[in-house]
Length: 396
Image: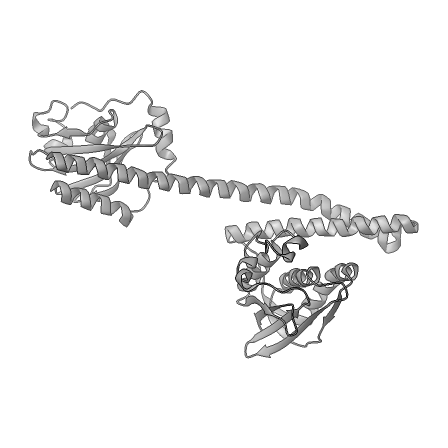
């Protein structure tokens, strides 16, 4: 038996194979379709998608064969990978490379083999789409052409897989970067905010002009910290690890916590914030719900005209509390009412786009509401403006 030679670019070839993230994955119908079609076209009992790893040939799909891998030194496909053209062995018992191969002298009793190499876009032979028979035979020109065509289509499928792997890895890197930077920013911002709060609370004597500057710095620190927290929550949404600790909580308390944060923004904008009293109890995370209300209320304030009013009302519907937040702004056009809940999406081409914002608040709010088993949507407020309606589970 002659072991297959290793290509001169073997290290790079193995690295290329690894980049497809396919070795040792589960069977998939798309790949099984290739082998069943190859066997049908070439009229053989066995067809394989064989990938040549460092010390083995591994089968992504095996039609008519129970094996999942064999040693590389016994592989017919290893010989095909060493070249760039289709390898055809009409009768393995008469070929000096294979006549005493265990796969020929024993099960699966290979006599005929035809393997079309899978050549990557960067020129590496990763393996083969091959057909095998237990009797000597030949392929017609049509069968050979069809096998080679199938191998090219299979390689195109693999290239698409690699592109998806690359996108997935890039997304993971981006999320890790955002999370790491956000964590690094949050600690100094928290310290800055705390120090400014101490000064503004009267623990240090400052004159009027200095106090105004400190107030502006304190507001900026709050906004930066809110942005950092939004980025961390966005990362949590992407990784499926958004933290919510549900229990019995007060809707009034969650709304008041939000109002404390939003009232200074409303005062600066000349907008009146009114919240109806409520005794409703919810099943949820009070701090997370306050975060939702901050985002929705701040959004309503930002789009309200000076002198406008943002109104919060609520009602109970069975096991759900419905909270309505109405503003007197331009409203949300019908075609944008779903996309505004997507990260970084804003209503472009309208007056709304000029209002700025990161485009994260509503996406995070929707994710948090869904994590509570509720829903959030937007429509028209009575008399004009936008109405955001949040449905949340009440205490059972």
